[in-house]
Image (cartoon, rainbow, N blue to C red; front, side):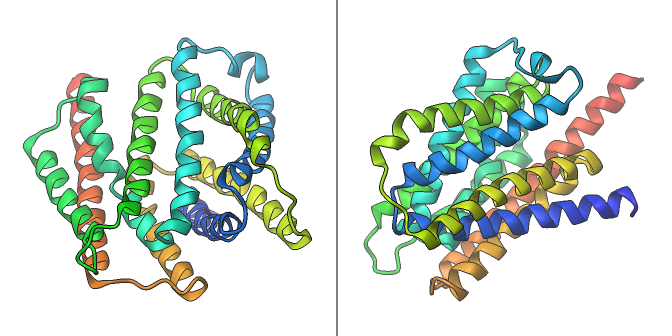
Length: 295
């Protein structure tokens, strides 16, 4: 199989599995505390991260070395908090609405990259950010005429995840991707294990099967995404990840009986379009800077 074709296959597999993972998470969180579900999920994630780092060049001894230990720990804690917020929002506002709001992530990342990374955002990207947030407002527009405060939960999740992405970019200036991946899994598992047991409750036998599937999907989705990034450029992969919104919406409607309003669909289209433009523009500018530096 050609590398590009394999890259697209791994990307689509990752997106599909992420959507399936969201559906399983919603099923479990509707019956069990989010911190409990996140804790068990993180145990599987940590084992996968350690196993992957062990097989990398230099093994764990190299992967654990970091120039930014404080920021690496902060990253791990941010993602752990974001996962708890995300799976809670699946039950509170639904899969489709949550993923539509999460799709504003690239726009928030572009905004945060100015004060944190010192990047310059031109008028085109600022315009895309503004248009994208008009789409977010459409998604948040209440059908009843009264704003539902529960929509602030996925919005907070989108902001926290964007902050996690920006800090990841910052530490990547000195640390390897494997180091960041290892700290993400280990720090998150430790954090969840510190609080998760206080929310422990017995799981039904059939739900242990779903919990096992959640751990398996968590590992396989990340593996497929890692393989995709090995074979394709990020600018190709990132727009495709918006398909997770479509897949999650299908699962939400077909399995959980969610309904999609016209404002939500229109808002999601605007947000996705603005996000894809922001990603493309960022890549185009980076490529122009690279060519200029090579002269």
